[in-house]
Length: 430
Image (cartoon, rainbow, N blue to C red; front, side):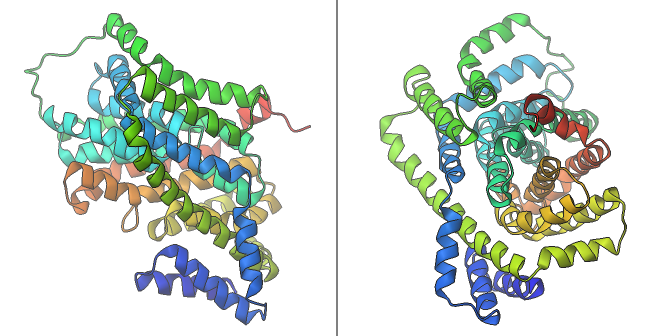
């Protein structure tokens, strides 16, 4: 039954049908083959969308739009520049650190790329950085946005697999910081051949005065991730309710603190948020139907048997599954991939004793890498559009960063405690 679903899905994609409708068609075909009444499709579809946890999705998307227009991203960038702008490859590091701060509020890679890229790519090009390289740094660093909490992919994974979203958020903290550190190392080693020195050999100096001045402007935005994490851990609000808190804080900052967001901007922001949310919810509903039908067809059990023929070693199984996810990420966007494969692969992993939080973080990072791989990588399209370059130029420049992110995956597989340590410490299972 899995091959029937995938066959119909990819056939539709080849004909240019939007993936959400491909999923719907594939589900209807499976229903007929399994001799289920068509009305069960509607029932399962709405059941899949009827989730309290999914309320967080529109709120974090709203936060991303507000941050983009409300001057928040600009202040985060200035503060990042004061911290790391003096290091070799300065603006590249600024780009990465800004993405870490931005991702800690919005939870979206695309919002990160649009906001940070719109500000920093022209600045990097003006400073002598190659346009393709500038776009590559922006695109690769945006992956941090779906790792550092809050994270929309973590929410979707938690909903579809009944995994604790709060523990997922905490599990993403160390990997998110490591991602930024690894991308900075890649930038350090690759910047020389991708930048023309226009400073006349004069190096910038680190000034604590600039750090304090920029922090004074940015502290109110930087405190949002702190409020979210501490509030969740203290039990003040849930991971879903944290989205409401982030939305309110971002709105207050944009309208009344920084005063760069106008009331007349809100209708367009709300329309964009609603449009994207509708698409995600329809995907979630269809993914729920898919998971239900594939479970009835015993696909997870068949996959477990297939992986079992490879090895009894959990590490080998994890590596094989990650290779599969890298291939999927090349041809499918992260949202449908998580919604389809999350419920299918998690039972296989837990059967081998793999921690659900560890696997969820690994899966989201892996499929996040797919955002920067052609031909479907949505972040690539956004970054190339902002930079005004061809996709082929960007793909060539992003290879070192892609390898760095794959190296991160390998590191996390070897040391799973990097993911599980904080959740087990702060939120032990009773």
